[in-house]
Image 1 (cartoon, rainbow, N blue to C red):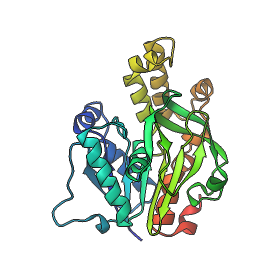
Image 2: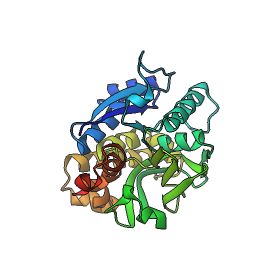
Image 3: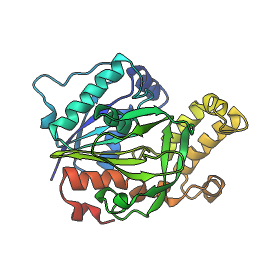
Image 4: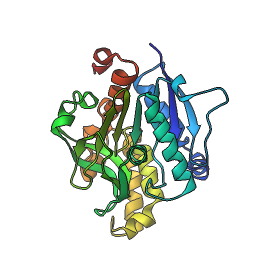
Length: 286
């Protein structure tokens, strides 16, 4: 079975242009490639939403089998026209009944759209490896985490967190920095699964972001110097290119949770299998 997916790109056009200048794809294209990597044959259409949005003439949300929402440098708590517009879009997505999935800002955006709240995380930034994410009792029984260990690591970069859950939300995973690392909201036929981390990212891309933000991360206390932060980012990129670099994996405590393709992207795979393709048994096999 093939599926038609909509990827809502929440990154402003200027920031996406910078990604292209740096040798990467836009956030929406990165997400599309990740979805296609775990479910070959799915088709993805990208909607750039951060600078104002409108569906193509004659199209509607229900034309799609599933909708994924990217991260963003914006904050879902910010009172900006572009954020308010994306909140409206997220609400329309959920109310349509088309199953949706969000990473990082995508989780926060949907939480806000459905009546929850987002704030700057008082515990500070979580970037690099989100450590010891622990499944709740509900998470251990949830299809998104079928086959997952009860405690795992993931790639992450975020300054904000969901501080109040929307009605009907279930926390599926948490860690010491962020209570809502994963969430399910189901209301009748309407369904959203979201994670605070980035299963769509690679060590290469995250390493680039770390190096690019070295000055800001140093100012936040994450290193003895900006150069140390930049080196960490470059080491992440080197490990992506050379997965056998045990020295780098050991230095930063990087486990198979983020270097094994099947483990790292399993949440995307489970969502597609369970909610979009409706073939959970077939796609669950590793």
